[in-house]
Amino acid sequence: MYTKQEIIIDSFRQGKSQRTIARDLQINRKTVKKYILEHEALLQSVCSKEAAQSIALSDKPAYNMTVPRQKVKLTTDVQEIIDELLSKNKVKLEEGLRKQMMKKKDIHEELLRQGFDVGYSTVCNYIRFKEKKQTSKEA
Image 1 (cartoon, rainbow, N blue to C red):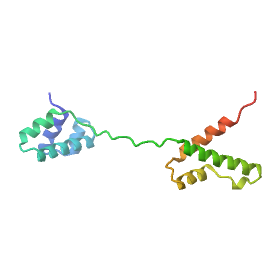
Image 2: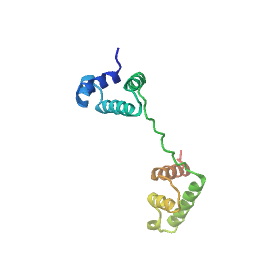
Image 3: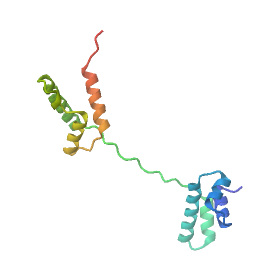
Image 4: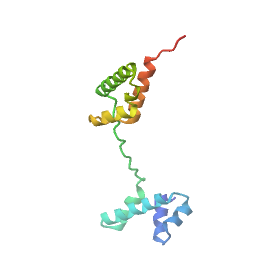
């Protein structure tokens, strides 16, 4: 029984296009291209073609698993700054300066200006959590 790699490489040697091979095998064209490029790179790196064929055709396909980027956590420093800005907003609201209050976007920009790498949605979620915690429902 032949593997997909063997069939793809054999079809490519016969002169079939990548699209035709992909259509015949009912797999993605990019997968066909990946197998062919891997095979050609292996042929260039190894001295003999027989060794390259035995290596390439016996190996299982390798997948390039990228490491997900690190998520920036909401640190206590960021929380303290947000709490301070929210308390300033509360004071401005009591003084009747509603238009001078900082919006969530302004708070996020202030944090970025101070050098914290925090996302806007993180700031919004934290403020929403704080507002939900402060307001209590009457029975």
